[in-house]
Image (cartoon, rainbow, N blue to C red; front, side, top):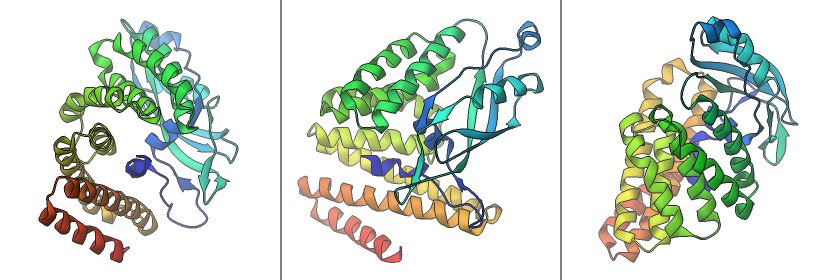
Amino acid sequence: MRALLAASVLIAAATAQELKQASMEEATKHLTKRVEPRYPSTAEMAHIQGDVVVRVTIDENGKVTDAKPVSGHPMLLEAAVRAVRQWRFEPFLEDGKAIPVNTLVKVGFSLGPGAELRRDYLQSEVECTKFIESNQFAQADKACKKALGIAIKLPKSFESDKMRAYGSAGTAAYGLKKPSEALDDFKQPLNFAQQALQTGNPLMIQVRGNLAHAYVATGQLQEADAAYTETEKAQDAAAQELESRRDKLKPEAYKGVKASYDHNMLVILQEHVAVLRKLGKGPEARELEQRASARSESR
């Protein structure tokens, strides 16, 4: 199941001297301590809200050693950076060795209904994610259900948080070998994802892949077949989007992301082949098997 999440793994930076670049999604999974920013009084009085994106450097021990704002309202930048400097992360690994990385993180500033509740959710989600990443699924199940219970109460404007909460709860249930419960959770984010995300968005690939796995685990092979087909379309869209901006990327960065996407698609195709064979769809299985074989040889 984790193989399908490879769209958000570490990618190579432009030169060997530069730090590795981790995606925002991967950084979120490694987050173990999140400190919410103190709302600047002048910004609060002016009803200024929005997200601040911060570029951070994280050392081998998971400590933030540098933080610089990338975007956001000027009145919110200092508070965001001050909060992010107190965040902590699980070490990022490469070949089993902890390495420093650069990444982007997002800090939200919101006022009005749901703002305080969302802060509670974000703290609970950190605990949930920490247990999932360490494969402590019994603890994760409890923590993720707590986070989901908070997220469900959030106003409609926080739909993306609800999507993430359902996904985490489903992952915890899947880890505990409760596929029916996982499937119920994984179904919830799909409608939002279809409305809010581009087909090739890494989160869309994750949503589709999670559904495919859960359908297989519950023996719903026809549904799994359809889910894998949609997952392949999403991964293809991601690859096409990468090609469209190839000229804007440094060669090594492009190669790193492409290798990740190629690996993703290979895993998806191989798992889809297994489903097709169980369904007795020999010709379709052989066609996908050839695609998987060609992709494997080209790597």
